[in-house]
Image (cartoon, rainbow, N blue to C red; front, side, top):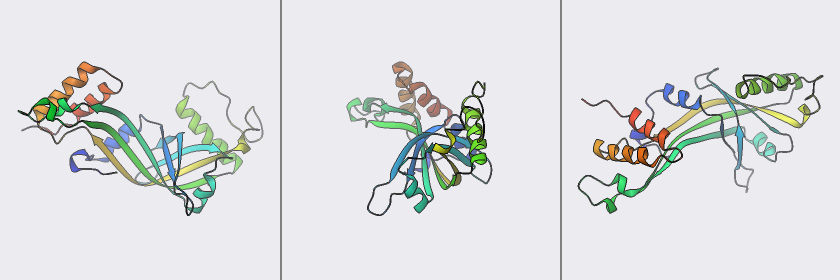
Length: 215
């Protein structure tokens, strides 16, 4: 992922705060020799600790075909993308230029977590980690806890494997035209506000909220 200086985040709080509101992404696992990478859509729980970048918890079915590749190379990438919109060319036209000379573009926020994967198969540890995941998605409760030797999910537990992903590096990009002159940014923001399509409000908030302070 190319990250221009104007699209880069200036501190870890920016991507951490954004990631705290997201829990679905795509896990990319290096393929075996001669094979393409495996890409697995999945829900996950991100915890800011331990370590400098935190940890991700997820689980997948035991029959999933990616396990062999994952065990051959535990270095993986979790990609999360949201707040994306298409920006029509006329909105981004340079000042004084014809509207038709504007370049269409995309706005989006993206965080990529490089991780080292550990597969958890111990029944008691799996149950504990699965309960932590459910607590994230369902804090109101209502589902029986997972336990290896009792309860309604004990028979399902052997069919799941838990992934503990220790994050070793982060690349974050918030692409919202902050390198363009303020009048052009204003025109784009006005277009997003008027269009009111899916993602427009969030994209506009990124564009206006992350502008550098003016002197």
